[in-house]
Length: 181
Image (cartoon, rainbow, N blue to C red; front, side, top):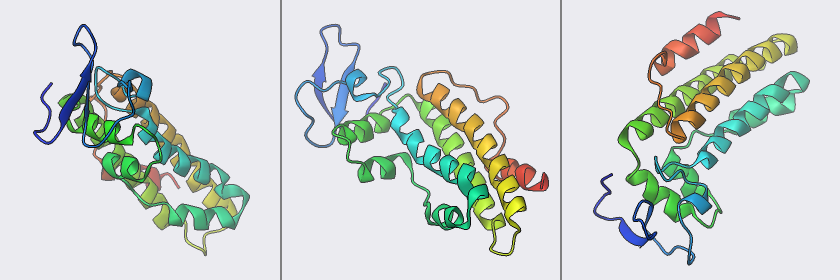
């Protein structure tokens, strides 16, 4: 695994199989594994919480118009942006590990994140104020179901199960989703 020049090695275990790379200070003794960063891929599942928040809001959209306003306020974030906004004590470690993450795993995660963002944005565009509540609930429910599948695939990529087969282009997935309603 190659790491960017600006990352510095701060620790390695005795077998040198797990290294932590950081831009800033890391609490003493913090390693990738105990920071919930997969040591094989260098990626953290915490990033998926950003998309799980959107799923939760979409699932509640059928219950009330207030949720639609919350969905509209949801903003896309890259992996790095998510961790920069995070209050996790290992945020610097997560950012640095991502910079040196397994290229195939990172590319797969980035593609899936782009796809999820496109689905959420297409869904938001469809959820207009003049859309009847039942129809809004149906659109949001379909989007949430698609997103759950994509989050599961992203979690698998983070954990080293890289599956590029069957991952359509982000806009193709959003278009297919919107044709269903």
